[in-house]
Amino acid sequence: MKMMDINKAFTLIEPGPVVLITTNDGVKNNIMTISWTMVVDFTPKFAITTGAWNYSYKALKEFKECVIAIPTAEQIDQVIGIGTSSGRDINKFENFGFTPEKAKNVNAPLIKECLANIECKVIDIIKKHDIIILEGIAAYFNSSRKNKQTIHAVGDGTFVIDGRKISRKKAMQSKLEGII
Amino acid sequence: MKMMDINKAFTLIEPGPVVLITTNDGVKNNIMTISWTMVVDFTPKFAITTGAWNYSYKALKEFKECVIAIPTAEQIDQVIGIGTSSGRDINKFENFGFTPEKAKNVNAPLIKECLANIECKVIDIIKKHDIIILEGIAAYFNSSRKNKQTIHAVGDGTFVIDGRKISRKKAMQSKLEGII
Image (cartoon, rainbow over all chains, first blue to last red; front, side):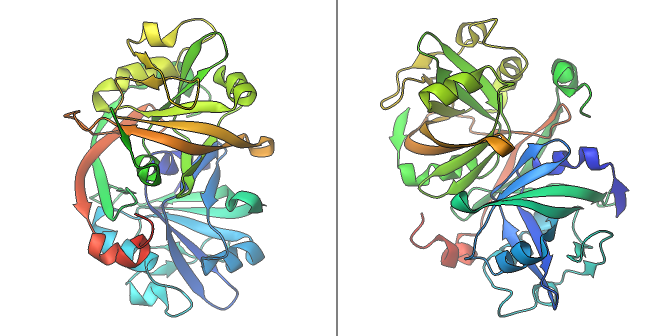
């Protein structure tokens, strides 16, 4: 996993993949699966929807740090296992065969086996809508991974895997200048 | 286009497709392209990131209504055209060959050629983060459309089209009960 330009990290979230979010509550690491995310700023800033019903919420609120990790298609069953169990009961890293790796700026761990990781600080909590605002401060990408297809949750128990990629860089030029 | 269960409308946004958002400012219809969206509630509620830099923002803020339309892969060049031009200068429906259709509960129009449309009310504006919270109140799906592949923007001028669909309904059962 190599560091990537933090100004390009929004491109990991903009396509709308299912993500894993790691936290550390001072004692142990945890992971949750989240599909409700969006970019709010190129710097980057992200919004995620979560609340007290998630065990990870307490660690997010108290320690104000997390890592967003991007899993790929072949990790779908780990992603679902993580999303349908609680860190209250099990150690999700051990249980689902993921390896925590030390991050540079936060105590929440990177996930070694994921395609990408973004270290984040919690910069705001909009309690009224259960939205947490994150600022990405360091990002990593595993370019040696053969399969880079990410997973999109539909929300009804089905998932869509990334298909063909097409470029419209020329048509988009006016929007991309100064951003990427 | 047939009405769909409003409680299932979150499944149109959860996978993270590029969407078109229509508004009506009391005089004319407009469309903008947005990729920064997320579900915040199953009822459904959605968050979108936009601000005064978008011409549509004024209509959203004043009339507190819009329609989220979901375009498909073969509409990508219309989507990009809409995203790189302004309703200040042109009539985007005419210019990009889309047909406005009367919605039931809002003055913003549906887009006839899109795969799905969700009529929405603006229920909150979080100015600090340029986030608008929408409540979906009616939804339509065009099941007769042969190609239902949606578009995911990467943010660097490239796009990923929906690939294969896989089901994990059984493994997700505990999460889906009472929701869908």
